[in-house]
Each structure stands twice: as C-alpha cells, then as structure tokens.
Amino acid sequence: MHIRRSLVGWASLCLALVIPHSWAGQVMHHTFESEVLDRKYPYNLYLPDGYATSDQSYPVIYLLHGSFGSEYDWASRGGLRKTMDRLIAEDAIPPAIVVMPGSQSWWVDGYNEQGETAFIEDLIPHVDQTWRTIARREGRLIGGLSAGGYGTVNFIFQYPQLFGAAAALSPAAYSPQPPANSSGRRHPAFLGPDGTYDEAMWRRLNYEQYLEGYKAQDQVVPLYISTGDQDVFDIASHAATLYQRLHDYQPEQVKYRVVPGGHQWRVWRSELPVALEYMFDHLDTTPVIQEGEASSLGAVIDVLPVSNQWRNVANGGKFSFSGG
Image 1 (cartoon, rainbow, N blue to C red):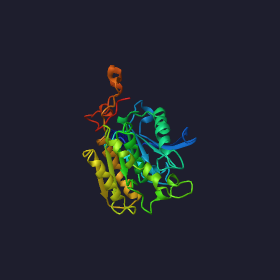
Image 2 (cartoon, rainbow, N blue to C red; image 1 turned 60 degrees about the vertical axis):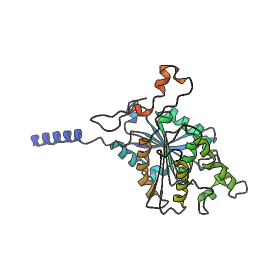
Image 3 (cartoon, rainbow, N blue to C red; image 1 turned 135 degrees about the horizontal axis):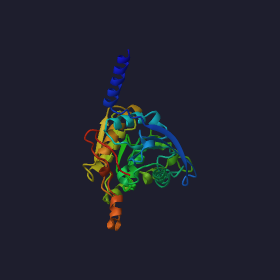
Image 4 (cartoon, one colour; image 1 turned 180 degrees about the horizontal axis):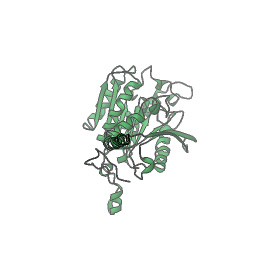
C-alpha cells in the first residue's frame, strides 16, 4: 500500500512537471472619478495569471462594447477571460491586461456626453497610473464590436500616436449615414435638442472626417476588420468601403475578413482570438522619439519598442515578457 501511494505521488509529480501551466486570469470591476464626465467611470479589467506576484509591466488592450452596451459585455457574453487564458497558455499572445470600459456614448463627444474626451484624457491615464501597463504606443492596442468598432476606427485615425494596432469587429462605420435600422439613429449621442437624429452630427464625428489627416502623417496603425456575411445592417458593404479607403495607404497593414454569421455574439466570440493574434502579430513597434529625446542613453532606453522586451524562450514558449 505504501509503495502504491509512493508511486501515485511520484506519477502526480511527473505529470505536474510535464503538463503545461494552466492559465487563469481574473476579471474585476472598477470605477474611478472622471473629471470630464463629472461622475464615476466604470470598467472591467482582465489581469493575466501571475500579475499579483510579479513586478512586470504588460501590454494593454482596450475592448469597446457596442451601442447601448456596457463594460460587462465582453466578459459576460464575449468569453473574454476564457479566450485570453487559452491564447496566453498556447503562447499565441503574450500575457496582457484587458480594459473593458463602459460608455453611454458611441465613443464620441456627442450630444449626451463627452465619451471620446473622457476615454483619451481620463481613462487611459488612469489605467496607466493604476495598473502595470506598458504606457506607450508600442504596448497599447484597441478593438471593439459594432459601435465599439466605429469608436476604434475613429480613435486610431485621430490618435495614431497612442495605439500600436487595432481590430474592428462588425464596425458600425457607416458611410455616409447609418441605415434606417441602425441604433445610431436612435442613440442619444446623435439626437439633437429636439430629440431627432442629426445627420450633420454623424458626418462631423464619423471616420471620414479624420481619414485624410491620418494619411497625412507617418504613423501607421495595423487594422483588422471583420464582419458576418449575414449582418442585418449591411456592415459587410460599409466595412469593404473602409478597407478600400485604407488599403491604398497601408496595403500590408490592413486586413478585411467576411465570416459566416450575422450581427451577433457568436461571430464576435469566434473572431476575438483571430483579432487578438492579428494585433500582436502586426503590432507596430517603431518607437516614437520626439525631437531631442534621443540625446541621452536614458531617453533611448525609455522608448525601446515593446517587441524588444519579449524574448523567445527555447524551452518555454513563444513569448516571455521581461521588461518594465
């Protein structure tokens, strides 16, 4: 009996040494006071396994919800934690932090709130100051679904200096106007004082207003676009227009994919891992160095691209982050 127990114990130890580490990240809800909104700003946060016991800094991904959604959507309906745990365990992506903010806007400074300004001026600085992120463009990614995809496209065209790669799933980036069945025509962000949909406001806040300015500068944000072939809002057509407009400028750093399905979570759950892998595979790691910034060795070290801080481990997988 003692021999059998010893053998069982030895076998268990051997299995523990052979079986890969089982990743188990955590999702938590947080709020902070937003000066722009003059209220609490909510977000859900995914922290990778090992965050609490390490002193490492991590890439950070912002995932935006859709119209009339909330900060809970990606975690409760999108399978975010399970997807992140699996991709990290498979070494498909490095351990990363995921921020899932909640907004009452379409991520714009619309009629109802300054969603864009609050995201850029309040949320990002708060996250970088509170959590161990790589607080530079080379370590910051952004993605979203539907209205969150619309917000993603707007953000990277306006602030390419902030994001290293992006993904827009079923983006509601309608051109020139949303279809009649789109919630954009009913959302408070685009409803004027008289309660009616404001076409001029849509045109002013849509990506078309920012595209030429984006093309006029030198920083390219790789973008993954996908949508279902049965989307009831005809997003496949609008996304194709977005892709064509961007392809001439960055042909090797934009991808458009049409998959089976509609405007539904089944599509977004299946596309999330594809989008995450694309963003990390195409992450623009060119450091942003301001004039005079490289005058000292310390300045150069400070802007080393994040890819230089991941290293291949001969016996341990694709990524191992070792920077701060």
